[in-house]
Image 1 (cartoon, rainbow, N blue to C red):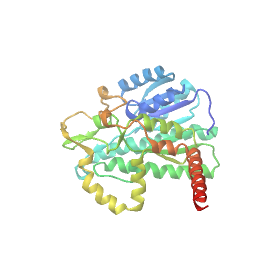
Image 2 (tube, rainbow, N blue to C red; image 1 turned 90 degrees about the vertical axis):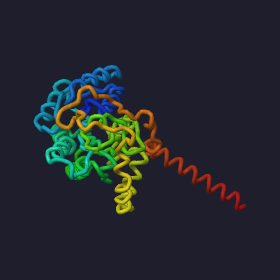
Image 3 (cartoon, one colour; image 1 turned 135 degrees about the vertical axis):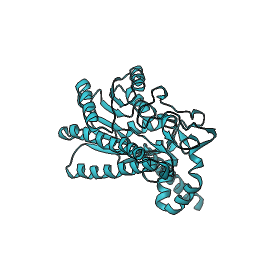
Image 4 (cartoon, one colour; image 1 turned 45 degrees about the vertical axis):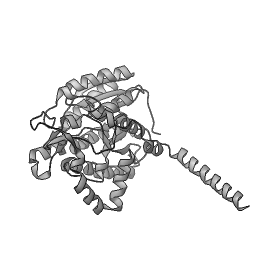
Length: 335
């Protein structure tokens, strides 16, 4: 367990909606003081009220994470209000649902700047403060797509791969320096968030996460757990485990399978989408900010895999007990 002060001071980027907003809720329930960073002021305002309702404190700091100076100013603002930052969570993201050949250079650049450079700039701001104090934790909100890329999201997948790479590099530097600052990455499955309501899409049908779909509270609790345990990575959901391990074992088969299913699997087949719908790639879409997306009816509310991943001693004990019982039963039968 990492050292904790009471109350913890936490920064969450991308906290106006989706997983980021659910993460803010998870920390608020434990009484944290939270700096909420995102572009959409309406979503931030709603998130501040929700944090207070859950028992925490929050300030909204409207921030474009693709702007390093804005991120640095936001970090200073949070510390001015609440004191030294204990935990920094990089969750902000942007994506373009389209074939790569249909993606404009400025669209690809913007999605990369928000998703990848936003995490880089957040990590810079956090380490600038944490390293001199020799205290703090950075959590990168990743994805199974950081290991197994899929069609129609080249910029997003590339950014998640990049986050994993630069996080590994930073980890080795912190280890070299014998720093107590910890950096970790939480790899998510498909989640029922608002990104599918407001992402830029050039598909004929409404975009959707690859099933199975999980409610955002599940990754939010995973992020809270990762922020307080010195685990290198945490995988969330059996589908994420399947994607990561499956790609390691049979990447060519995964290529073939995703070429066959990845286009239809990311679109709601009976729900066309207007090509001129508003999206948040360059400007926030204020009236669509929320924690949950439109997939409540099919979203999972529990993850046995996550419970097992975060309760390894209990799992080891259970396995040992089963093994002992099996040996005893076999011995009795032999007699």
